[in-house]
Length: 116
Length: 112
Image 1 (cartoon, rainbow over the protein chains, first blue to last red):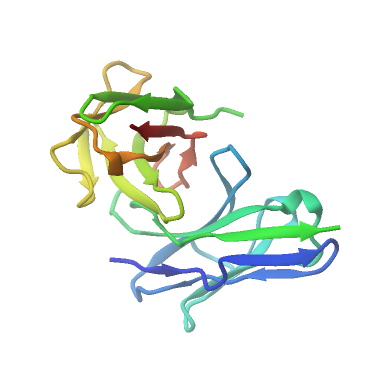
Image 2 (image 1 turned 90 degrees about the horizontal axis):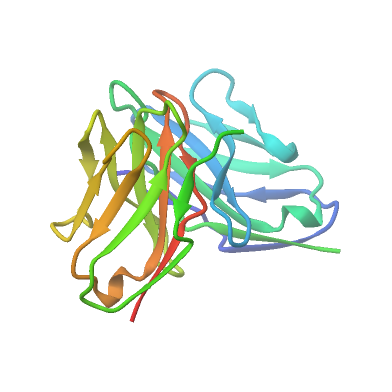
């Protein structure tokens, strides 16, 4: 089974500063990678995905992530954060199920808090 | 933009009672999922459903749980004889083949 590690449970940053949220996964088989964001009292919203192709993927709200197969990482970055980026961020991994992507394995989440 | 809707948003139930959580997946999606998140813990997979049958389930999804797609739009999770440890946020998700899963806002289940 997959294991997803988000090394930081909380990341406080000031507005307009850059941020990196780290994610590592365990499996060496073909994987598909996702970042979801959860705002208070809301569901999980897809931020970005890596299925194949370029290892640098861009998502919504100015976020991007880089898939690094040798380091089994998929870190999320944003060059300049806004207060509205304050939320919980989840890294998730899926495997090939033949006809579709499989179940998601989630990390524990990273609470990003942006201060003015 | 189409979305997954879940009802109710909050369900309070006495221990030992049965509860049904309801979900309306995105129209035309073929794959349906339930996940749960116990407070302070990871989001955990419960079950996936395709072509009117369970395609995968986790060790959490024991005989206490069942899923059903009673009509063309609803997808339900039933928990029989609820326990205190079933208290969690339950998320429904749906997807097309080879596409990311779209999640609802969740149902907060509180067992008293």
